[in-house]
Length: 272
Image (cartoon, rainbow, N blue to C red; front, top):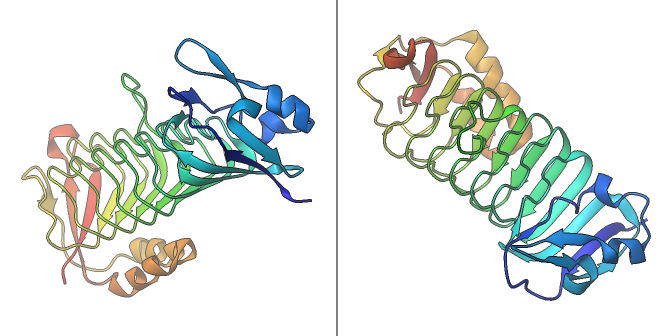
């Protein structure tokens, strides 16, 4: 069977909640039933058929084509199957995911994977602010799963992150890993100001040696740690850009902090 594909044919006049367009939400429905699903906008609803052309049969593999950023919560609550976005996924994509795999062939908005508990997200473009974080006012960000960004990520990537893995092939913005509780973040590109601000625990790896750490981090040596080498070797499965990291395991400086929040986090920075 071919993937169930929804191709955007009419740009909506407002931002739309796309959470119902998931494998679970579309499973067992006929094409007519899918076209009648109501998607909420500002103060009105829009039928799927009024916005999308629907084709294909396999609801376990859903493809959303032509999105341009006006759809919110794409893949929110995803718990299985495959969801592919061709275009811009908008804000809160993958929010509160527990399973399955979502791929964004394009850019993602703010709060990518916010409150994520499991599954995987791959974004081939750039992501906005608060990737892997939580909604405003929430005490924890993502608690599981993996987010891989082939481009760059915005400010406060991993803010209040509790568990899980965030990998960024490009740069990260200001306050990366701020208030981080646990988990792992790896950035291959440059980092903005105040990385790991008030970090409590967890591991952050910066492949750019120009990262400017806060003075509340103490240098803890330059020796190789077996656990870090094994971690770096395991990242190769997420793409060829991460394979060279394993060969640099003995060229990382380890810093512990933030001393203003207990000082139990670790930041590893490339020395050359």
